[in-house]
Length: 265
Image 1: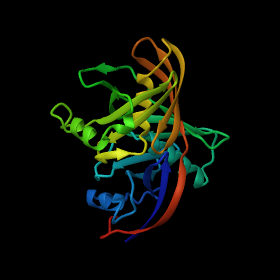
Image 2: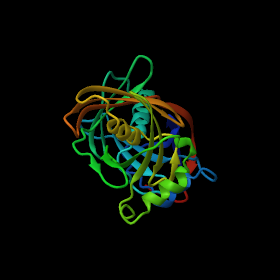
Image 3: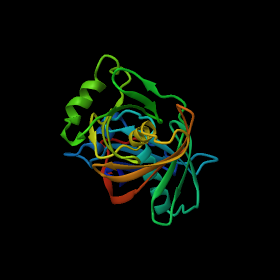
Image 4: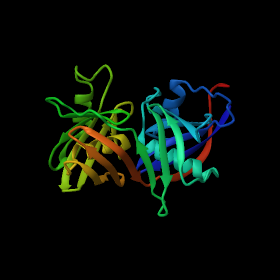
């Protein structure tokens, strides 16, 4: 069976998208997904998403990590899905879609930036390793200087596979403050088990951790190895954040046909 696919990327965080709006209930095995995401023998991607229909929503986003396992919320993936929806002809001032962590809103502004509303955050945990913030996926925030000198693959893997985090896994973000409202972030992602060029839920968590206003509106600019994004939010009290918007580019890369090894319908 041959299956059409679309490749998109958001600030270097890249994804395979499969359009299943015909409700064929396509079922991919973990091996299928690993093969498609493989950068040497496959299409190459940080994850795979299936674009499905869902009553009362514009679409439903099913996200899988590059290891083939069902994943949690992916911020850059969600932004790429919104751009994909627009490219299929679903052009709207506002989008409403369903992901693993619930309902999300999104929009594409006049300059082409895709703005994705994230769920509220009501908890920030501090431990000896760093700050833990869940923005649809769990993230560890570690502040450091000169993060380009850090071996993110080695250090991120060590933390992610430590006794504390091994069972559920965690994404590890190394964050460098570059100004009062700007940060530089490098992320080791579970499921990919490697550093990615950008991580949407990761930079969102990092932005919340560096909130410079005691309360009220915040705008944080974020540099990643894959490009620049920004996060806007309202901070309410010490550990409550609402009206969180992850904003940045999302672009089509290429399309093609992938031959599945066996019929999956």
